Figure 1: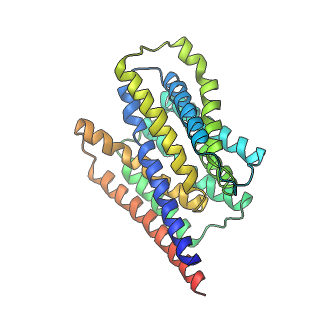
Figure 2: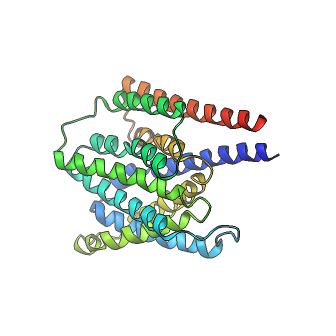
Length: 295
Protein backbone atom coordinates (compact mmCIF):
# COMPACT_ATOMS: atom_id res chain seq x y z
CA UNK A 1 0.00 0.00 0.00
CA UNK A 2 2.84 2.39 0.87
CA UNK A 3 4.53 1.67 -2.48
CA UNK A 4 1.25 2.40 -4.29
CA UNK A 5 0.79 5.65 -2.36
CA UNK A 6 4.37 6.72 -3.08
CA UNK A 7 3.93 6.12 -6.82
CA UNK A 8 0.58 7.91 -6.82
CA UNK A 9 2.07 10.91 -4.99
CA UNK A 10 4.93 11.13 -7.50
CA UNK A 11 2.48 11.09 -10.41
CA UNK A 12 0.33 13.70 -8.67
CA UNK A 13 3.43 15.83 -8.05
CA UNK A 14 4.48 15.57 -11.70
CA UNK A 15 0.95 16.45 -12.80
CA UNK A 16 0.87 19.47 -10.49
CA UNK A 17 4.14 20.80 -11.95
CA UNK A 18 2.70 20.39 -15.47
CA UNK A 19 -0.45 22.32 -14.47
CA UNK A 20 1.72 25.10 -13.02
CA UNK A 21 3.75 25.25 -16.22
CA UNK A 22 0.61 25.41 -18.39
CA UNK A 23 -0.64 28.40 -16.41
CA UNK A 24 2.78 30.13 -16.38
CA UNK A 25 3.18 29.59 -20.12
CA UNK A 26 0.29 31.96 -20.86
CA UNK A 27 2.31 34.89 -19.44
CA UNK A 28 3.92 35.79 -22.77
CA UNK A 29 0.57 36.13 -24.51
CA UNK A 30 -1.17 38.02 -21.70
CA UNK A 31 1.74 40.47 -21.34
CA UNK A 32 1.52 41.19 -25.07
CA UNK A 33 -2.24 41.76 -24.76
CA UNK A 34 -1.74 44.27 -21.92
CA UNK A 35 -0.33 47.61 -23.07
CA UNK A 36 1.49 48.49 -19.83
CA UNK A 37 5.11 48.92 -18.81
CA UNK A 38 6.47 45.39 -18.04
CA UNK A 39 7.42 46.22 -14.43
CA UNK A 40 4.02 47.85 -13.85
CA UNK A 41 2.49 44.54 -14.96
CA UNK A 42 4.88 42.69 -12.65
CA UNK A 43 3.79 44.83 -9.69
CA UNK A 44 0.06 44.54 -10.41
CA UNK A 45 0.01 40.79 -11.01
CA UNK A 46 2.20 40.06 -7.96
CA UNK A 47 -0.07 42.22 -5.79
CA UNK A 48 -3.11 40.24 -6.94
CA UNK A 49 -1.20 36.95 -6.56
CA UNK A 50 -0.16 37.86 -2.99
CA UNK A 51 -3.77 38.67 -2.05
CA UNK A 52 -4.96 35.44 -3.70
CA UNK A 53 -2.39 33.28 -1.89
CA UNK A 54 -3.11 35.02 1.43
CA UNK A 55 -6.85 34.30 1.06
CA UNK A 56 -6.07 30.66 0.19
CA UNK A 57 -3.90 30.45 3.33
CA UNK A 58 -6.77 31.78 5.46
CA UNK A 59 -9.28 29.37 3.94
CA UNK A 60 -6.90 26.40 3.94
CA UNK A 61 -4.29 26.86 6.70
CA UNK A 62 -1.16 24.64 6.80
CA UNK A 63 -1.64 21.06 7.95
CA UNK A 64 -1.10 20.40 11.65
CA UNK A 65 1.46 17.75 10.67
CA UNK A 66 3.49 20.25 8.61
CA UNK A 67 6.71 21.41 10.20
CA UNK A 68 7.39 25.08 10.75
CA UNK A 69 9.24 26.61 7.81
CA UNK A 70 12.89 27.36 8.47
CA UNK A 71 13.57 31.09 7.96
CA UNK A 72 16.66 30.72 5.73
CA UNK A 73 15.17 28.51 2.98
CA UNK A 74 11.84 30.40 3.24
CA UNK A 75 13.46 33.79 2.57
CA UNK A 76 15.93 32.34 0.08
CA UNK A 77 13.14 30.72 -1.97
CA UNK A 78 10.93 33.81 -1.79
CA UNK A 79 13.74 36.19 -2.71
CA UNK A 80 14.99 33.89 -5.49
CA UNK A 81 11.61 33.71 -7.21
CA UNK A 82 11.00 37.45 -6.85
CA UNK A 83 14.43 38.28 -8.30
CA UNK A 84 13.84 35.79 -11.12
CA UNK A 85 10.56 37.50 -12.13
CA UNK A 86 12.10 40.97 -12.06
CA UNK A 87 15.40 40.10 -13.77
CA UNK A 88 13.60 38.16 -16.52
CA UNK A 89 11.38 41.14 -17.32
CA UNK A 90 14.42 43.44 -17.47
CA UNK A 91 16.34 40.95 -19.63
CA UNK A 92 13.46 40.88 -22.12
CA UNK A 93 13.87 44.64 -22.58
CA UNK A 94 17.65 44.44 -23.13
CA UNK A 95 18.10 41.31 -25.25
CA UNK A 96 16.07 39.17 -27.65
CA UNK A 97 13.13 37.17 -26.28
CA UNK A 98 14.72 33.95 -27.54
CA UNK A 99 17.98 34.66 -25.71
CA UNK A 100 16.09 35.60 -22.55
CA UNK A 101 14.01 32.40 -22.44
CA UNK A 102 16.97 30.18 -23.36
CA UNK A 103 19.14 31.65 -20.61
CA UNK A 104 16.27 31.52 -18.08
CA UNK A 105 16.01 27.80 -18.70
CA UNK A 106 19.60 27.16 -17.77
CA UNK A 107 17.82 26.83 -14.41
CA UNK A 108 17.81 22.98 -14.47
CA UNK A 109 21.62 22.99 -14.70
CA UNK A 110 21.90 25.30 -11.68
CA UNK A 111 19.33 23.22 -9.78
CA UNK A 112 21.24 19.98 -10.46
CA UNK A 113 24.40 21.21 -8.74
CA UNK A 114 22.67 23.21 -6.00
CA UNK A 115 20.38 20.28 -5.11
CA UNK A 116 23.39 17.94 -5.13
CA UNK A 117 25.27 20.30 -2.80
CA UNK A 118 22.48 21.47 -0.48
CA UNK A 119 20.01 18.56 -0.50
CA UNK A 120 22.27 15.60 -1.35
CA UNK A 121 19.91 14.83 -4.27
CA UNK A 122 22.48 13.23 -6.54
CA UNK A 123 21.26 13.32 -10.16
CA UNK A 124 20.65 9.93 -11.79
CA UNK A 125 21.85 8.97 -15.26
CA UNK A 126 18.37 9.61 -16.70
CA UNK A 127 18.54 13.20 -15.39
CA UNK A 128 21.88 13.81 -17.12
CA UNK A 129 20.52 12.23 -20.30
CA UNK A 130 17.37 14.36 -20.15
CA UNK A 131 19.40 17.55 -19.68
CA UNK A 132 21.55 16.78 -22.74
CA UNK A 133 18.48 16.04 -24.90
CA UNK A 134 16.74 19.15 -23.58
CA UNK A 135 19.75 21.25 -24.62
CA UNK A 136 19.61 19.73 -28.13
CA UNK A 137 15.85 20.30 -28.31
CA UNK A 138 16.23 23.91 -27.20
CA UNK A 139 18.78 24.65 -29.93
CA UNK A 140 16.42 23.20 -32.56
CA UNK A 141 13.38 24.93 -31.08
CA UNK A 142 14.91 28.41 -30.99
CA UNK A 143 17.41 28.07 -33.87
CA UNK A 144 15.57 30.43 -36.20
CA UNK A 145 14.64 32.89 -33.45
CA UNK A 146 18.08 33.36 -31.90
CA UNK A 147 19.52 36.81 -32.42
CA UNK A 148 22.49 38.83 -31.28
CA UNK A 149 21.32 40.15 -27.93
CA UNK A 150 23.19 42.64 -25.79
CA UNK A 151 25.85 41.38 -23.41
CA UNK A 152 24.16 43.10 -20.45
CA UNK A 153 20.74 41.65 -21.32
CA UNK A 154 22.16 38.15 -21.77
CA UNK A 155 23.98 38.44 -18.45
CA UNK A 156 20.81 39.45 -16.62
CA UNK A 157 18.89 36.63 -18.35
CA UNK A 158 21.52 34.12 -17.20
CA UNK A 159 21.16 35.54 -13.69
CA UNK A 160 17.40 34.96 -13.86
CA UNK A 161 18.14 31.31 -14.68
CA UNK A 162 20.33 31.02 -11.59
CA UNK A 163 17.61 32.60 -9.42
CA UNK A 164 14.99 30.19 -10.81
CA UNK A 165 17.20 27.15 -10.16
CA UNK A 166 18.07 28.33 -6.64
CA UNK A 167 14.41 29.06 -5.89
CA UNK A 168 13.42 25.46 -6.74
CA UNK A 169 16.17 24.03 -4.53
CA UNK A 170 15.27 26.17 -1.51
CA UNK A 171 11.57 25.49 -2.06
CA UNK A 172 12.36 21.77 -1.98
CA UNK A 173 13.95 22.33 1.46
CA UNK A 174 10.49 23.33 2.67
CA UNK A 175 8.85 20.07 1.49
CA UNK A 176 8.08 18.99 5.06
CA UNK A 177 6.69 22.43 5.87
CA UNK A 178 4.55 24.81 3.80
CA UNK A 179 6.24 25.64 0.46
CA UNK A 180 3.36 27.87 -0.67
CA UNK A 181 4.34 30.41 2.01
CA UNK A 182 7.55 31.03 0.07
CA UNK A 183 5.46 31.82 -3.01
CA UNK A 184 3.36 34.29 -1.02
CA UNK A 185 6.54 35.93 0.27
CA UNK A 186 7.99 36.04 -3.28
CA UNK A 187 5.02 37.96 -4.66
CA UNK A 188 5.05 40.40 -1.73
CA UNK A 189 8.77 41.09 -2.34
CA UNK A 190 8.20 41.41 -6.10
CA UNK A 191 5.24 43.78 -5.65
CA UNK A 192 7.20 46.02 -3.25
CA UNK A 193 10.34 46.20 -5.44
CA UNK A 194 8.42 46.95 -8.65
CA UNK A 195 5.80 49.28 -7.07
CA UNK A 196 7.59 52.52 -8.15
CA UNK A 197 7.02 51.56 -11.79
CA UNK A 198 3.27 51.31 -11.22
CA UNK A 199 3.38 54.90 -9.96
CA UNK A 200 5.81 56.28 -12.58
CA UNK A 201 4.12 54.55 -15.51
CA UNK A 202 0.54 54.96 -14.33
CA UNK A 203 -1.40 52.47 -16.48
CA UNK A 204 -4.85 52.83 -17.97
CA UNK A 205 -7.31 50.72 -16.00
CA UNK A 206 -9.93 49.49 -18.46
CA UNK A 207 -12.32 46.54 -17.94
CA UNK A 208 -10.18 44.34 -20.20
CA UNK A 209 -6.90 45.30 -18.48
CA UNK A 210 -8.40 44.68 -15.04
CA UNK A 211 -9.66 41.24 -16.11
CA UNK A 212 -6.23 40.38 -17.53
CA UNK A 213 -4.46 41.43 -14.32
CA UNK A 214 -6.96 39.45 -12.22
CA UNK A 215 -6.35 36.38 -14.38
CA UNK A 216 -2.57 36.82 -14.29
CA UNK A 217 -2.48 37.32 -10.53
CA UNK A 218 -5.01 34.75 -9.36
CA UNK A 219 -4.76 31.89 -11.87
CA UNK A 220 -1.55 32.32 -13.87
CA UNK A 221 0.70 33.21 -10.92
CA UNK A 222 -1.42 32.37 -7.83
CA UNK A 223 -2.81 28.96 -8.77
CA UNK A 224 0.41 28.21 -10.64
CA UNK A 225 2.34 28.83 -7.43
CA UNK A 226 0.08 26.45 -5.48
CA UNK A 227 0.51 23.67 -8.05
CA UNK A 228 4.30 24.10 -8.13
CA UNK A 229 4.52 24.19 -4.33
CA UNK A 230 2.53 20.95 -4.13
CA UNK A 231 4.54 19.24 -6.85
CA UNK A 232 7.95 20.08 -5.38
CA UNK A 233 6.98 18.20 -2.19
CA UNK A 234 6.64 14.91 -4.08
CA UNK A 235 9.30 14.86 -6.82
CA UNK A 236 12.99 15.75 -6.88
CA UNK A 237 14.22 19.24 -7.71
CA UNK A 238 15.89 18.05 -10.91
CA UNK A 239 12.74 16.32 -12.17
CA UNK A 240 10.61 19.36 -11.33
CA UNK A 241 12.93 21.69 -13.24
CA UNK A 242 13.13 19.34 -16.23
CA UNK A 243 9.33 19.32 -16.34
CA UNK A 244 9.27 23.13 -16.11
CA UNK A 245 11.05 23.17 -19.50
CA UNK A 246 7.58 22.70 -21.03
CA UNK A 247 6.83 26.38 -20.32
CA UNK A 248 8.77 27.95 -23.23
CA UNK A 249 7.57 25.12 -25.49
CA UNK A 250 3.93 25.95 -24.72
CA UNK A 251 4.33 29.69 -25.28
CA UNK A 252 4.22 29.41 -29.12
CA UNK A 253 1.15 27.17 -28.81
CA UNK A 254 -0.89 30.04 -27.32
CA UNK A 255 0.51 32.40 -29.96
CA UNK A 256 -0.53 29.90 -32.65
CA UNK A 257 -4.07 29.71 -31.26
CA UNK A 258 -4.30 33.51 -31.07
CA UNK A 259 -2.54 34.61 -34.26
CA UNK A 260 -2.32 31.48 -36.41
CA UNK A 261 1.48 31.79 -36.54
CA UNK A 262 2.82 28.27 -37.16
CA UNK A 263 6.13 27.02 -35.72
CA UNK A 264 8.88 25.81 -38.05
CA UNK A 265 9.66 22.13 -38.59
CA UNK A 266 12.87 22.42 -36.52
CA UNK A 267 10.87 23.99 -33.67
CA UNK A 268 8.40 21.09 -33.76
CA UNK A 269 11.30 18.59 -33.77
CA UNK A 270 12.93 20.37 -30.82
CA UNK A 271 9.67 20.36 -28.87
CA UNK A 272 9.17 16.63 -29.51
CA UNK A 273 12.72 15.85 -28.31
CA UNK A 274 12.20 17.85 -25.11
CA UNK A 275 8.84 16.25 -24.34
CA UNK A 276 10.23 12.74 -24.95
CA UNK A 277 13.27 13.46 -22.74
CA UNK A 278 11.13 14.63 -19.81
CA UNK A 279 8.60 11.81 -20.12
CA UNK A 280 11.31 9.14 -20.43
CA UNK A 281 13.20 10.54 -17.44
CA UNK A 282 10.01 10.53 -15.35
CA UNK A 283 9.06 6.97 -16.31
CA UNK A 284 12.56 5.64 -15.61
CA UNK A 285 12.52 7.34 -12.20
CA UNK A 286 9.11 5.86 -11.33
CA UNK A 287 10.22 2.41 -12.47
CA UNK A 288 13.31 2.62 -10.25
CA UNK A 289 11.17 3.61 -7.26
CA UNK A 290 8.86 0.68 -7.95
CA UNK A 291 11.83 -1.70 -8.22
CA UNK A 292 13.26 -0.37 -4.93
CA UNK A 293 9.90 -0.89 -3.26
CA UNK A 294 9.68 -4.46 -4.55
CA UNK A 295 13.09 -5.26 -3.09
